[in-house]
Amino acid sequence: MNTNETMAITQDLFQRIKQFSRLKWEQRPYHELKQSECELLELLHFRLSDETRAITASELSRQLHITPGGVTHLINPLENLGYIERLQDPNDRRVVLIGLTDKGNEVSETILAEVHKRLVGLVTHLGEHDSKELIRLMSSTLEYLAALPNK
Image (cartoon, rainbow, N blue to C red; front, side):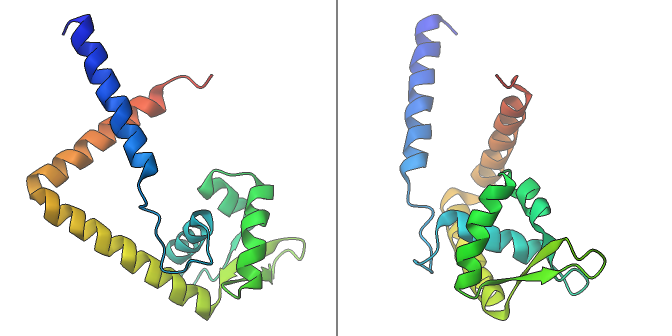
């Protein structure tokens, strides 16, 4: 591939990536919630079970790749709206655990159902072959980006 072809492909790729960032993929069934708050509810929904009813804020911080202060910033409004609750760790009173309320569980299920509906629509639009190819290309892209040095 010559330099001009590489430049043209690079510019086209850059434009497509910008278009993705402008999409309204984040449309939420609960307009009172920010996208980051929906992501926290989704994470709790997937991580919690009958055995694990709550997790630490530090675990949320690691899973969401944000600072502990950022987690607190997300937790406060969700607690005020009744979606999550703070619980005391029975083994260590200094540790605060975060769990979903019944309302939070219901909302997270609704959010995940909407995401699933959109993804099924995308797979139907693309077809099986192109959907699998998209997954392969996205995985390869993520591997490449993850291997880049952090500077």
